[in-house]
Length: 280
Image (cartoon, rainbow, N blue to C red; front, side, top):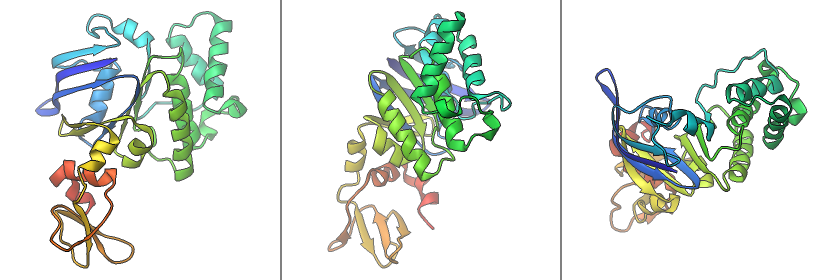
């Protein structure tokens, strides 16, 4: 579904993508990385909003430089900031997007609008104005418009940003359902979302693909490298609720070892970039 080789994208003197290479197939692939790593630039490139300065990209078996409109007919895209028309109702907004997607037959279009609204659980509020919706409902609305036309490729940029734990759980339930039978690429910096949803994970660091594998592959990177102590001792460490420090790195002999998580492996991959979130 997606083949990217050596993608480069620069904004002025800053390279947002610096030789990025990865592939994605049917299932849910997580793009995991800190803010500023290049995830949004990559997602916008996959959505055909941006073109690479250099490199090769094929989407759905096609070249976006030549077949952009055909690719857009077969993908759904939820940007980080969807830009809702807040005075529209839920139905009006999804119908407006359906018109932009060239759904010209009014009856068939309205059937499709009702289908995707039902699929994301917003049918009871389809007549409400967007400005009255909760953050979780607006995220589901963004997914509804992305599902129009039953796309083969679904791109979601930071879809759980700003959601509370209950809303995030409902989002995971939704994505686990709609991810069957299509390719979903989910950009996030939340390791728990990737661990819960993704069959593949791509770790993005400084515009490059730092790692590509399964969530279990990421977790295994920290095997035998997590331990507890009364003083900060690891390459990466932070104080836990019981007063002990959880350390990640080369464990000293006789250390009290801990069970590694996917987040531990991810922090090891980030290296120095992870220090700002583990020194509190």
